[in-house]
Length: 194
Image (cartoon, rainbow, N blue to C red; front, top):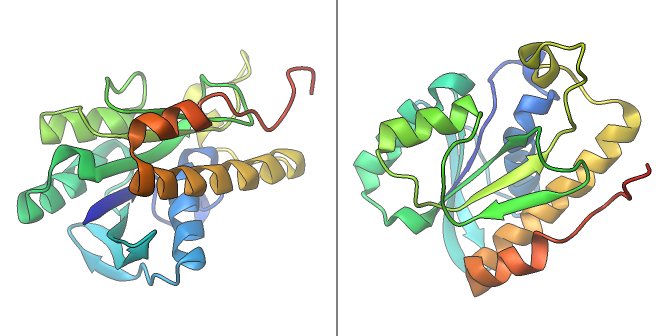
């Protein structure tokens, strides 16, 4: 089984914010593959189903972003899965808008949700998909930026990024992380001058 985790904050006020790119991706996968992600367990909303012939559990931690690791630790302790069976999807403010970035492993960077996961699991060798949510304007506080919504134009791009992330997940399950990284890490949905 693969454990596909989207990071975000619970609550209607956070629903379509930049920080909830992971939740938005899980919701898209749930619709696409008819997986009901409403069961409450492991401090998360979870749902099990099949993607590309593989059993999956879709996970939306309900601990708030900065404590995401508490939920993932409960899942890991219960199922004791191999590290590469965990795929985490989250927002990224550093990569170019209109792209996703896939990594096989690595540090959390500046992302508090990822810091919490790595701290609680005590390992970082699991795949992750970063969804670009735009670069923070210099005049804006980081917390305010990631908790802000998208403009209409940005929302269209995010929708396409979420589809890309979904395609990447399918490919990870079918063909592995290496091939998926080379296929998706160079894709751009918008040109630099836009």
